Image (cartoon, rainbow, N blue to C red; front, side, top):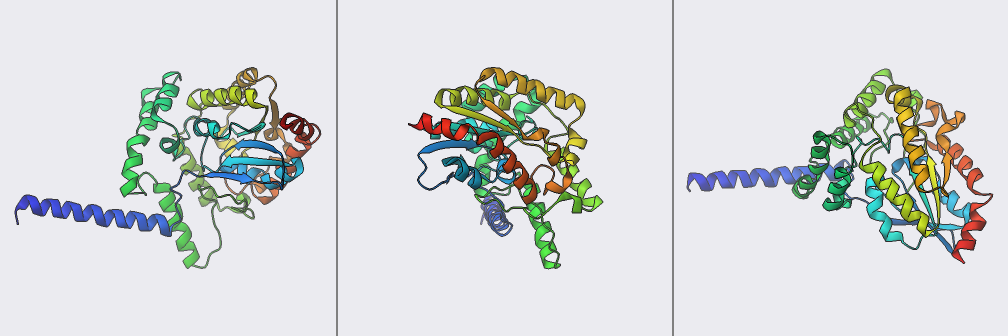
Length: 338
């Protein structure tokens, strides 16, 4: 056999073995590789249909089954973990019959430097380029966003590519289970259930775990907080489109005090509020629900990790949201559907 043939055989075998290992790791560690699917929170024979756009924070923060029942609405939504308005905009067109739209955001979701793992799967490349072109972002940010598109094809063979955090978290959990330890972490994947991390609270974290999670979060956003970019442009487009379809509700969720203390300085919060003020002008009729201003939720005991609420936090946030929506939205929505 020629040397060149041997080299090809060796390289091919290495690719095959590595691909198999990558797929096995993905399956064994339950790493989410799908960009989600259209789901429905159904309230019996409800005539009104609404659309909820949000990341895993929206699912852990609000009990949408209770909202659906209380308002007598069918709530359509895509379950995309780590998503943001950049991805939601591409999904909004699939629910053109919605009489109401719920947009669930937070300072974490709107940080331009937190990128969704499934961005290239959901946002067409021309739209991504258009968003970048009209955003005040640097060349490094361009590279971060556009590099996800070739990576998408690499992941056909190696699904763990670019998912080192998921692999490390999964391995850590498996090792803890083997050692008989029950402590777990809320993952980045999103399911259509709302019990992920329901009984966890970050007040139980050890100091080293808190430092590890803060370091991981800082690495994910490269230590930067910005609200001027593709996410803002996408949310602006979503507000305009949703306003033409019917009612619009923007719910601003809080993050844990631990996250806020580390990443949300007074300057960052000022810039976040400035962004919201600009967006309010886009859709004057939209109703804004500021759950992030609730003093009750300003406790680490109500969060399973730095940004996700636990079961108790969800109960408080859901009750507050229903209190804001119940008096008028239910009757108004049915009037619109008729």
